[in-house]
Image 1 (spheres, helix red, strand yellow):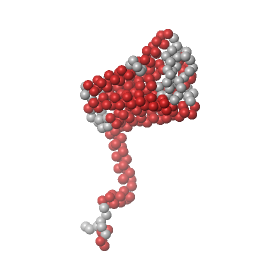
Image 2 (cartoon, helix red, strand yellow):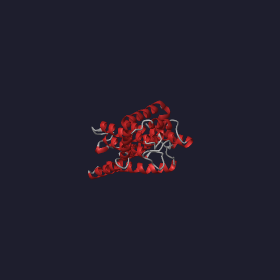
Image 3 (tube, rainbow, N blue to C red):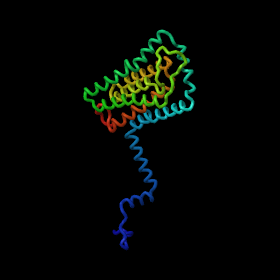
Image 4 (spheres, rainbow, N blue to C red):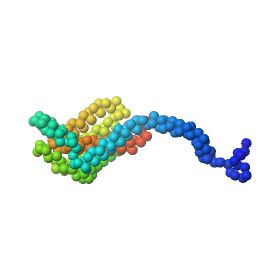
Length: 254
């Protein structure tokens, strides 16, 4: 049957115009279709969305809050009380323990392990995993240096540290480096049976490294929190790009 709107030589309406007319006549049907599509998208990608929220959005918010506090006040209200409390715990045994943990958190542990991890993944031809680890670990170090220079925050001087540092304080390089490695290991291990013990070991190590820097009096707590937040933000962002549509070790997409 000819379209009555095509009389008098007028062209028939285009398919897009017909769809638009349907949307105007049935707005609730259109809204329902869009809602259903959104629900399907969230259901299909909920793991990545949850990871983006926990690993990117929350750390971004946290880092921004800490940066604003440091910029406006120079320190947070809880910085000095926590350091003073830890100072009261000093003793020969804890001194040796936390100096060792601090060293493992950078030059004698994290840095050599970073290099060996990337080399091992490359030699075993896990190229995507090696690229992810290399970019995450090396990029984290560069980001830390740049951020330290940007904020130029002086280190605490509440007492004479047994392991003094002389560069800038915010964010903590030890905290950021150890948490970067922790995130890399957890994300690579997540599709495997080793995920839970990897999470326990990696996060416990990152926590101890952060506490060691406070115990030694070379960082404020806000430096540690900012280092953890920046590490999470960076590593998860790299992961979401490197493994877009896939998972480590050639697993199918989420």
